[in-house]
Length: 345
Image 1 (cartoon, rainbow, N blue to C red):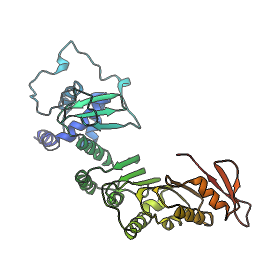
Image 2: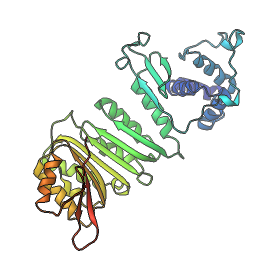
Image 3: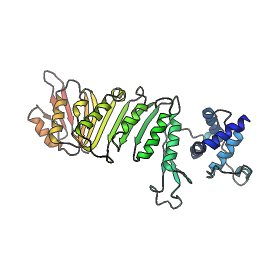
Image 4: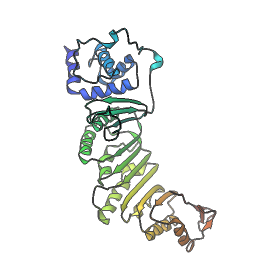
């Protein structure tokens, strides 16, 4: 009775999670007994017998993803015309790093076999499976949170870009259900609604973070006032994530007067601006050159002529031109110097 109850619970209350898990295993062609061992470690030995797991696994392996299936139907392995030795140890596909992409018909309109309500699952960009009647962003979200629930792993990188406010609200709801903060080394957040970083960063463990990048596109909201923009940047740089990260990057696409003074207390950071006034960039560069704190700063702005900026700097500083892209400015009362490298974008 315990076995039946547990199995019924998994198939009845979490069919999509169980289906998504099997899809990933069959795409990688993991031997069924290895896949079952991983399943048991996650859900427990009483969740499903090996025989039942193998039944569903073999169906998924041949592309039958429906969970509504009669167990009395003959298994394809009973057919002597098809042979596949899944128990060969060299068939194990264990990867430390792999990518899984979930696409819809909107992305792959040229695939006639892909219907509007189907999801194209792509692993390593060369193993494709079409999952019928599956919403691509839902599958991505289920599998992402399946990985985030691992209590021991430290993820290498998470990149989050929100393009739908309703979907992002569901994403935040799932974040609240996590029992611990996400342990990850590199985090990139691309915002469209100007508040995504404040919703995501509280669920990231600052102790493991090494790189933090926030790209503020914010195309789906009206421009905020300078006071509101400054307050937003202040909250970002005051987080433990920004302070503990070795590599810090902010990119702003909006036409705002960026409050660069909030970054001057950090020895290393990267700042990319889509639009800014020349006088503001000049003022920032001067502040960097006279600051005792800065060690390495990467600054970019597509609306400013850096050649002209260097000409303006030469009027106030002893600029030594090494070549067209490399300059040095001696530090007063020191044998050291600042290095300025211009890079074409």
